[in-house]
Each structure stands twice: as structure tokens, then as C-alpha cells.
Image 1 (cartoon, rainbow, N blue to C red):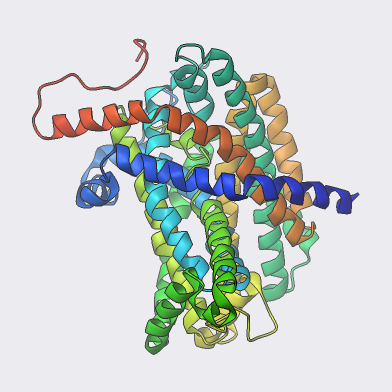
Image 2: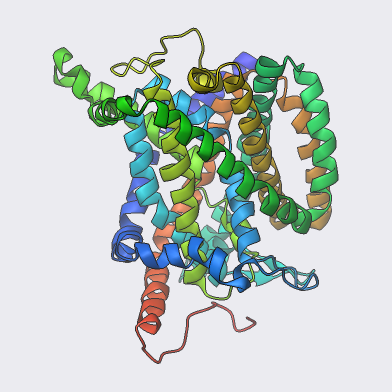
Length: 485
């Protein structure tokens, strides 16, 4: 049965992550960069100051909102979104990309991030612009809403918008089980077993119990946990990675050289042009897949956390989307890649491991070159924190999608299934979980990117409206597509 499932999954994954899917993903990033005139580059200081800088200078960003209004603070929405994006993709995913796509895969992760910043920006702008208050009086937003009300609001597009919204929601539920649950728990169980000899069933049982306590409390409880967990775990990992790379600083130039050579297959030139192209295509495919898995730009997932923010300005929430991708891929994934490539445990030409290990164990071995026996344990704890925070974030995404499709009662049942799958994920084969997650990502990505491209003009107008007001123009802000806001 598993063989049949793996065969079908491989066939579907080959389609969604084939030339069409990759072209659509890159094309959306290019197009949104063009429509906003390179906002992520031209206004780097502005969006950095209004995100990371604002955390330390503007109390409104971190202030908790009234419990009755259903909104969460901007900082809580950031932490919930980052909780979902900063996960095993930052450790296991980077290692897998290098091992299977070579060092050049890191370059394509960067390319995905630089363009994905504006895809994420567009998602969050549309998420705020088209969000609504639901029957409980809380904000309901996400790709399904801008597909239904934005794309569906165009002449003759109502059936298409409704169909794509339903497809996105269905794929999101599936992705939450794979990417947001089983693959993360699988990585946790594997690392705890390797580092601390904890049986997978024990890890699964403990995580299931904790998940039941947190997830049944809804978004407010999830946001409360993530705003405490995310900053600490990110700071701890970044500090450890910087120390490790600092020890091997002499190998940094060679690591960057391998990344740029591998990105374009230049180390395969001896095999002719065909060999060069095949190597470059492999690096591109793995870098883009793992980049999407890591920062989720283009999937439309983080919108469901960002749309619950107390912010009113769509462009402001869009800037948080840019920062999320920057922090996830440009900072954390790059540090993981440098830890691996400077440690001497990887052949910088082929990306093959020079030690009998792979995946997160490879990252643990790299840290072990500096921290000794504590290296694998450090990575095991990092994977535990990163991956479990992803489980929390994705539980909200899946609940939101299920609620959109089937209503509140179904959402309650969904949470029960999600919690049960935490235990299942601890004992499933890792390769099957990862490939299933890749496929779900791709299926979720397609309707979302169609919606973003169709509504790119709206994103452009909202951005220009914001920038005009920023430079002193006395014009009305574009805050919502609906009068009720």
C-alpha cells in the first residue's frame, strides 16, 4: 500500500514541481518585484525599520489586543508565521538540498528568497485587504478569501475564484498534515533518538499530549506560546551557528565559491554542456523546492496568521511578510549551509557527505566539529524547538482552511485528527513524509499563485498608495475592499 501511495505521490510531485510549477513560482516573484518597482531592494531600510526595528521602538507592535476583538498583535502574528516557517526546512531541508542538489542549491534558495519576499508581501497585502470578520467576530483571512472575493470579484471569474479557493483550502488541510505536522514530528523523533536514545513512540506520545493542551486553546493560546518560543529558539541557533562558522572562517571563501559554481553546473563542464545543464537543473530544482519548504513564500500559508493581526495598513503587514522570508532563508538557512560547507564533512564539488550520515544528523556532526559530543544534542534540541513551533503554526492554518470549507464543527474535528497524526508522524518513514510534503506544497502553491498574479494590479495600487502617502500625498488610504472595515 505504501509503495502504491509513494508511486502516485511521486507522479503528482513531478508535475507540480516540474518546469511549469517552478516557472510559475519564479515568475510570480519576478512579476511582483516588477509591479512594486523592486520594493524589497529600494526600501530595504524602510521595511527593516518598520519590522525588526519597530519591535524595539514601537509598543503598538508588541502590545496585546483586547481579548474580545479576536485580533493578535503584529509581533504575535509575526511569531506565529515564523513558527510555521522556521522548522526542519532550516536544518534538515538545507542538508537535503546540499546532499541531493550540491552546494549550488543554496544559491537557488537565495534566489527563491529574494523574489519570494515580494510574493510573501503580495500575499499579506491581499490577506489584509480582503479579510472579513467571521461569525465569532474575529478576523478571517487567507488565500481562499482573496481568491473568492478578489479574483472571484472580477467580471466572469466568480466560479473560477470559488473553485480555486476551495482547492487551496483542501490542499492546505493536506499540507498541514504533511509539511506542518508529520514531517516535523518525524524529524524531532529521529533527532531525539539519535542524540538522546529516546524511542520514537515516546517522543510521539509526549508531543501529542502537549499539542492537545496548546491547540485546543485556539489561536490566542498558539500565539501566546509562539511569541515566547520563537525569539529564544532563533537567537540560540543563530549564536551556535555563528560560533561554528567562526571557528572554520578560513573555509568560508571556498564554501561561497562552491555555491556559485554549483548553481550553474560549472564544476560539470568537463562532462560537456549537457552535463553542466543537468547539474544546474538539479541544483535549481532542489534549491527552489527546499526554499519553498523553508520560507513558504508562494504557498499562501502565512497569510492566515498575518490576517489576524491588529494592523490596518495592508502594506505594513506586507512588510512583515518580507521580513519573515529574510529571517528564515537569508539568515537562518544561510547559516545552516555555511555550518555544513565549512565543516569539512561535505565534498564541495559534488555535495556528497564525507561521513556516514545525512540529513539533520549531518548538521549535528558539523556542530560536533566544534562542540564535540554536545553538537548532535544541540541540533536535536534546535530541531525540537524549530519543528514543534512549525506544528503549532500549521495547526492554525489547517484549522482556518477546514473552517472555510466545512464550518466550525468540522474545524473542531480537524484539530482532533491533527493531534492524532502527531503520534503517527513520529514513526513514519522519513523519505515518504518529505516527498508527500513537497507534493502538498506544490498543490497548495498553484491556486495561490494564480490568484496573486491575477490580483497583482491591486497589490501595485495599494503599494503606490502607501508610498505616495509616505512621501506626503494627501490621499485616502486603501485599507480594505469592503466598507465594513
